[in-house]
Image 1: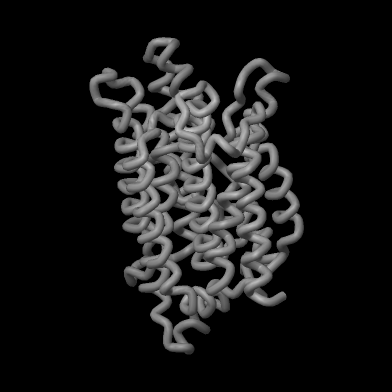
Image 2: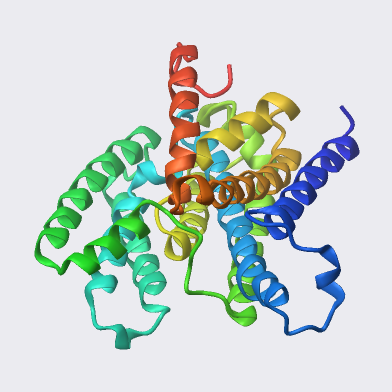
Length: 332
C-alpha cells in the first residue's frame, strides 16, 4: 500500500473518533456549535468538557502507543508494554502520595508528582539493568521493571490502608485510568502537546536507527548504528512519553501493546511510517475507548474508568500474541 493511502486511512480513523467523541458520546450535539459564540448549555458541554477530554485522550493514546512501539523494538520483545519497565510503578506511588496530601497543593500536584516519580523509577531501572561492563541489557530492563512494579504495588496498598475512605476512592479511580482529568485549560493542554511533539520528533529522527536495531543489536552495529546509545536514548524518550500520559490520565494499560502490533500487521515495520501511523491510530483508539465508556453511562448509571476497557480489550490480545510467539525476537 502506498504511504499516502496509509495516512489517509489513519487520518480518517482519527476524524471518525473525533466526531464520535465530540458530537455523539453520550448524547448528540450539533457540529454547528463549533462555529457559534453561544453560552448555551450545549456549547459549554462541548468546549469545557468534551473538547479538553478528547484532546487529553488523543495525547495519552498517542504517547502510550508510540512508546510501546519503541520499547518493543529496542528491547527486542514483542510483548513489551510501556508500563512493564517500572514507569507505572513510579507513577502509582507519586500519584497516590499527591492524592493524600492536602488539596492546597493544587490540581497539578498529582500529575507533577506522578511525572517525577515515574522518571525517578526509570533512571533507577537504567542504572540497575547493566551488566558488569556497563552495557544496558534489554531483558534486564524488563525484569527490573517487573520488580519495581511489584514493589510499588505493595507501597500503594499500604497507603490505601491508612488513608480516609474518600481518598481511597479517588486513588482507585486514578490508578485504573481516567480521562476525567483536572487539566482543562487551553494553555495546560497546549504545553502537554508541545512536550509530546518535541519527544516524538526526537524519536522520529532515529527512525532509520530503529529499523536497524529491529534486526538485532549486532546487526545494527555492523550497519554503523551505535546500538547502545540508541537504546538508552530511545528508552529515556519513550519513558518521558509514558510519564507524561500517566501523570495526566493515571494508569492505562495495553494501549502500547495493542496499537503498535495492529499498525505493524497492517502497514509494515518501517519506523519512518509506523511511528506517525502509530501516533494517529493510538489517538483514535483511546478516544473511541473513552467515547464507549461514556456511551455506556446510561446502561450502568456510572462511568467506568477507561483503563478497565483497554484492559478488557488488551488482555485477550496479549494472550493471543503470547501464544503466537515462539521466539523472544520481535522480527525474524
